[in-house]
Image (cartoon, rainbow, N blue to C red; front, side):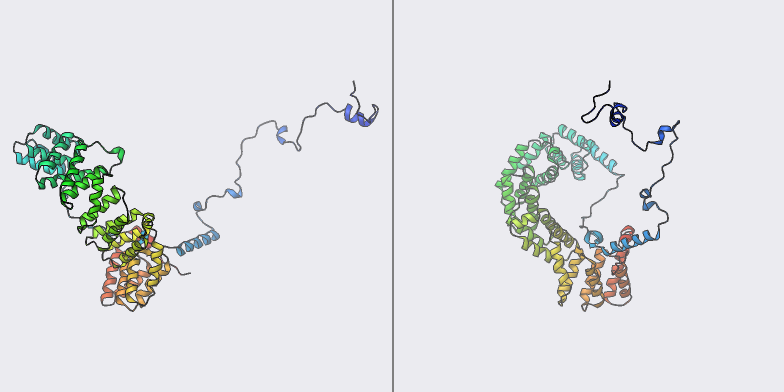
Length: 481
């Protein structure tokens, strides 16, 4: 049956017959042009895909680079040389703190020595036992066989002097868990002579300091800790304020309890004393251990940096200032005072290790740019002393840009003051600047006579001792563009 024609068409109309009668009800969608695979009778083998232009190999893998690429690399290297920096971390040869000469025993003899001392602990002669107990504590070898031998002897012996020496050695080795050992030390704190009290406190000071440096979750329980704390507080209150026993007891108390008010009060009282050593220990305890910083502590720390006769104290003071940070210093309104002292110590401090510690403190306190601005202006002053101080300061600060470096090279040749030129030579050797321009100038002047020639010869010897890797890094000309 023919479909009903739409309105306006008749059944015999050819348009109606072509569109509605002869056309099928559904025609599939076909995309033209059709794929040639429709007429294939077999599947072709996979073929190699030709690489496109964007899939070129990496430039680093090319054995022969084109002229254009070489030109780009040359321009890049020139740009890097333009940006060559002269910062302290790149050039400075850090000075080291002088360590006390100690007896370094042969590692091969170490086990034999320990075996002999452990054997002497069971000797029938008491002086041999006492010596062995003392030696094992002072050697500081906390091995299992050493600790177990000391414990066994401590439990078996009845001699009070020997029990005391073993308890003290165990404390020095960090073995504070046993309550019976701690009770022996506490009894000597209460009843013994002043010398023995100081002896016990010195051992506790070493062991408690090591214990306090551990993370909280790694700290072991201290035997009879409440009794030890109580007796230390009693010693602090009974003795004179600045007595050695009082001070060491307060230090031990601070290691045991950071927020102990008795220890905090004693440390604050020590800041007003003239003993530089106790003052430094009190500052370290207050800042590092107790995290207490106020205007009085900051002023004492600045005075310690400026005036302490012990150079290690000045180094520690600079490090403590860097630890405190600029925010706390600004809160106490002491930024200008700290800045002036640091600027002064950069040039007037006689020891290099202290000047380098001060320079690092300046960098940590974010004052380096301000110091550079002042020092670079001083290089151009007519005053000889100002120029000399500026050169000394650059010897630990390093150079901000190459203009200051070439200014010093020019001063080495043309400055009217021989003292300033000597300081320029020392600055180059201190920074380890094994640069072509520096070496050329130093070699030229080393061939002459006088103080300047001797300083140049010394500087060249120092520069020759720089390790090869560091020398390869620094032995590059600074091109002028």
